[in-house]
Amino acid sequence: MSTPLDVDGTVVCDTMEIPHKVNLLGLSTSKLVEFFESIGEKRFRAIQVQKWIHQNGFDNFDAMSNLSKSLRARLGEIAEIRAPNVIQQLNSKDGTRKFLIGVSGNNIVETIFIPDGDRGTLCVSSQVGCSLDCSFCATGKQGFNRDLSVAEIIGQVWIVAKSFGQLDPKANRTVTNVVMMGMGEPLLNFDNVVDSMNLMMDDNAYGLSKRRVTLSTSGVVPALDRLGEHTDASLAISLHAPNDRLRNELVPINKKYPIAMLLDSATRYIEGLPDNRRKITIEYTLIDHVNDRPHHAYELAELLREVPVKVNLIPFNPFSLVNYQRVSNKALRAFQDILTKEGFTTTVRTTRGDDIDAACGQLAGSVVDRTNRSGRYHQQQDNNQIEPINILHN
Ligand code: SAH
Ligand code: SF4
Image 1 (cartoon, rainbow, N blue to C red):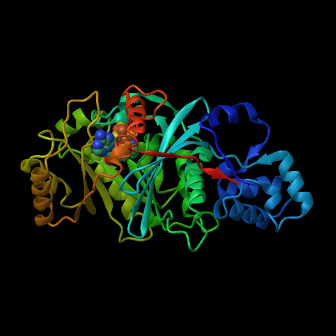
Image 2: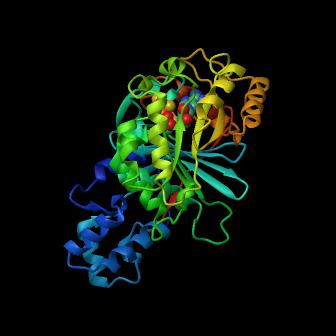
Image 3: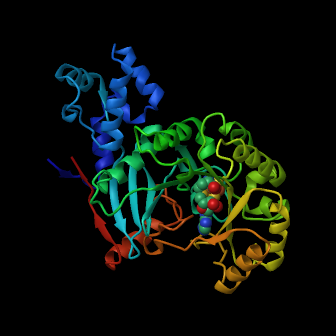
C-alpha cells in the first residue's frame, strides 16, 4: 500500500536506521555481485536484484518474484534497499520539478527535473555544499558539509524515476539525461560519483547512453586526469572566463590548476573515449559587465580554437549575498553571435524553474542555508506560487 512520506521523513528514517544491514541501493554492479557471492549466490542473482531495484524501483525483497522465498527472507535479514527521503517536491510553472532530498545528518540536497520536449534532464547533487567557493555560486557560499554516498547520489535518480513511473510506457515523463550539476563538485567525491554514473549507464540499472550522463567540473585536474580509467561519461568544464586573471577571481581553484592545464586534461579525457566524436561542453556563466563583453567572447574563441568543444552559455542567476547581475539579453545574443561566427556550436541554457529557485546555481540547500532561500521558499508557498506535493512510496 502507498503511504505519503511526511515532511519530517529524514528524522523518522534516521531513528529507524538498522546499521548492520547492507544498503544494496548504494552498491556498484561489481560490489553487488561480490555481495551475492559472499552469501553463496551466483552473479545472475545480483543482476536480477539490480533490475528490481533500479529498473522497477522496488525497495522490498518480498515483491521480487523470481527469487526463492528463502533467499528473499535471507536478504530481508541482512540487507535493505534504502533511498534518501523526499522531504518536498515543488513544481514550477514551466514544468520543472525540484525535489528536496533529506540525507543523514539532517541535511538537504536538491535534485531538479527539467522537461524539454521528449527529453527529461535530471540535475543531480554530489555533495552537501561545496568547498570551492566560486564567487557567483550559491552552493559555494554555503560552504562544504560532506560528500554524498552512492545510495544518496543514485538514490536521487531512483526517487525521480520511480515517481514518474519510469517503466510505464504510458508515463509521459521520464529521465533521459543526467547532469552532475546540482550541489557540489563531483570530482571531489570521485569514487561515489564514478560508481553512481556507471550505474546510471548500466543496462541492468538505468541504461542511459554515455552521451547523456554528464559530469560537470570546475577543474580538479588530478582527479580529471584519472577519470578516464573509471568511466566514459560525457564531460562539461565550468570555464566562465577566457583568461587566468579573470578566472582566478571567479573560480578560485584556477589558481591551483590554471586554464591551460585544465583544457589539456579535459582534451586528453575526451580524446581517450572510445567514441571519438564527442566534445567537451564548455559552460560559461555570463555575468553583467564581468565576463560578458565582446572582447571576452573573442578571447574565448582564441583560447578554444584548437580544443574539441561546444559552448553552453548560462545567464547568471542572481541571489542575495553577491552583487553580480544577470547578463542583459542584448549582451547574451552578441556573445553568442561572436562565438557562432567564430565557428563554435553555441547554445544558451534557458533559465528554468526560476519561481522555485531550481535554476542552475541556485541549489544552495535549505537547512544550512546562509542565503535566506528557505525564507523565500515559505513566502512563495504563502503566495501559492508553488505547489508542494508528497511523493508516494510503495
Ligand atoms: N561543481 C560543478 C557542478 C555543479 S555547478 C561545477 O562547478 O561545474 C553547475 C553549474 O552551474 C556550473 O557550471 C556552475 O558554474 C553553474 N553555476 C553556479 N552558480 C551559478 C549561478 N548563480 N548562475 C548560473 N550558473 C551558475
Ligand atoms: Fe562548487 Fe561548482 Fe559552485 Fe564552484 S560552481 S562553488 S565548484 S558547486
